[in-house]
Length: 74
Image (cartoon, rainbow, N blue to C red):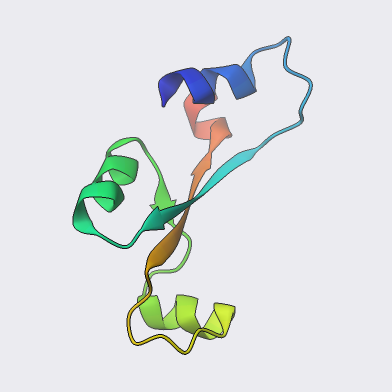
């Protein structure tokens, strides 16, 4: 994960990327993996995410998460 983050902030990289976005499985193991690597949930609750995505599912199978590369650069 650190390799991917460092690749995006390398001075030779011209992608103009600010955020890394993932669609993590809504399961404790992958969610904890991404949290341990500095990712945050885009929505604080599943209900907020369901409303935004217009999901009719009882439980979301995935959760949107993001990492702000500016934090990695510091």
